[in-house]
Image (cartoon, rainbow, N blue to C red; front, side, top):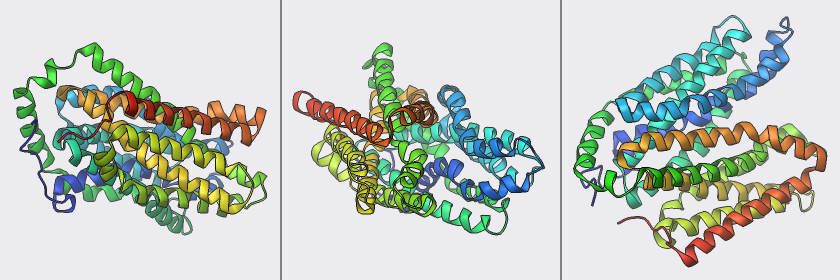
Length: 405
């Protein structure tokens, strides 16, 4: 079996490389969410700028736009110069670009720093996912990706809470949260050595290049990217549209959104712990089908009747379902890509994920304005139900996708 030498049965919390990779995955949510609590005060502090209203709102989305442009190139670069080297470079750029908003003099320069932050996210996410494919395999890889989803969900709560506290003191202080990834560098120091060992074994295993034709794996990655982008686009109805839905049914949008997204992240973090045992027991396609079914039920429940208990129940179902399908996308991508093309594959999936975030408000807001929340949310439920049926059919008539031994 390929990569027998790799980090074996040690618990992840005793493996410095695994800790570093887990914590690096949380930079994705830190990039966008951290400054959100400071936006109103930041806008007020630049009241003399006639574009302050538009620029401050764009600061949150700006990194995602750069990720879409940079991630495919980052994938090619990771395969060429090495994933560990790219990961360290990305973390350093993340710290420099993210914290720059604490001292830059105007919104235009802060916006440029946010675009640079997106480039850092593209480098770190692409390299991090590819390294997971290099250093772990089979059931252990599934376990790591499940724990990664746990880390992302709970770190989101921590980052937003910390940023909210700092924003109450000064709108510039939340940018200092971006200095925290400096603490990751000692954990990443040994990854390059492990990457070189994994590369030597991969070169000696003909299956990584000969068992999959170029066209075959690229077609498979394209299908995974399409599924990823569609899923993220519909999932982002929650953070982008739920405040307006809550306001429309008579709830306070600020506290209601915080509670709804809090339940979503808590449910997602808890359910992600089940990803590995469920995929081992039932297979990946069954887990994906269950995740899509939960998301379908969640969207249907939220708009079925405007009461608080249904809103929170639906949010919990959506968070639980997404925590099962998100790691599944990376499992599929790492499984179909040849060993020497994992950087390219992870770059493409990363691009698809952030593209879904960007196009979600562009496409779905128009539909919402024309039809209202019920048709859109029920439409999202219908799409996810179709995905669930597709996963169930794949289980019945094809491979269950159980983890490799």
